[in-house]
Image 1 (cartoon, each protein chain N blue to C red):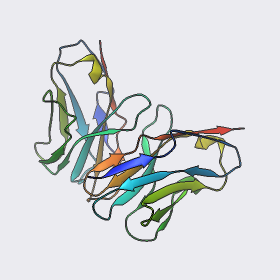
Image 2: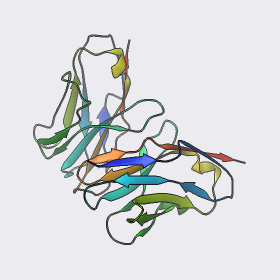
Image 3: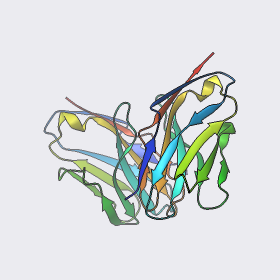
Image 4: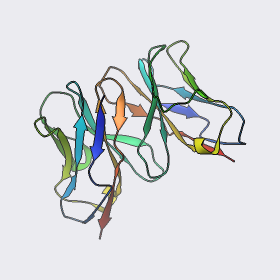
Length: 110
Length: 113
């Protein structure tokens, strides 16, 4: 059975500093992995996806994630946080259906 | 095509009543998912369809919940004898192929009073 663990429920950074949101996954097969973002009272939006091509994946709004099979991780990063990045972020694993992590709330301080 | 649409957007019902939600996926998407999300939590998987076939149903889903996708297009999710614990946002998503990204609707917010 597949599952996702997001290691931090809340991350707080200052504007202009790097962002790191951590995700570990468990899957029987070679999964596809995704990061979604959910702004308050908004729908879920895809940030980026990994589907067994390049291990470093670039997404929208300057976000990146690196697939590390040996560590079963898919951490999300951004070099410089912006106020508009404040939102809830979900790591998702899919090897048939799609399973979400519990989410990480990102706060960006001015 | 404007994406995944869900109807209604909000539903308030009395405990014990039945409710039905509808999801219209993106045209030609053969996969359709239902999730439930409560405040401060990630979306919880309920069930998914490949065309009209329901391929998996969460064990967390009680017998009061049923979903259909009769012609492989729109889907309905019915909750019978609603309970206060059913209050949540119910999300629908669709995708074109296995393991490609899913596109989400705005959700149906259910409040059971």
